[in-house]
Image (cartoon, rainbow, N blue to C red):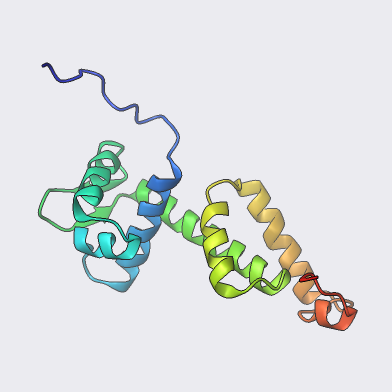
Amino acid sequence: MEKSTLKKDPHKPLTPTMEDYLEAIYNLGKEKRVVRVKNIAKRLGVKMPTVTNMLKTLSERKLIEYEKYEYLELTKKGTDVGKEIDRRHHVLRSFLTDILDIELKRADEEACKMEHAVGSATMDRIVAFMDFIQSCPRTGENWLVRSGTSINK
């Protein structure tokens, strides 16, 4: 049987899974000198062959530089995506914990899902709202406590 001659379209949008890999690689790169397949597999809770398959896809899209059995690096484009997804995750987790008083573990899990769906303009508005809530003299950081309002009802 012949192999398909169709190439994966590098212009298709990234999937949430691809973004998760780029975020993991970005964070691992900040923690370690080199990033290896086993590090990614451990971080994401997947098997090493699964990681290898995704790395091929990310390499074809010019998001990483990767040779089998070697360490890998994000390209400039891959770094930009990984950094943005990481930023979204932290902002959303902070919004959920600091503003909506959601428990940290749950907020982290939900931020991971939300980070792929929220656009840049919406993220900027969330950040502006958080800044306002946390700095406004009438509200301040403990505005929920002082208002006697509980979101957890």
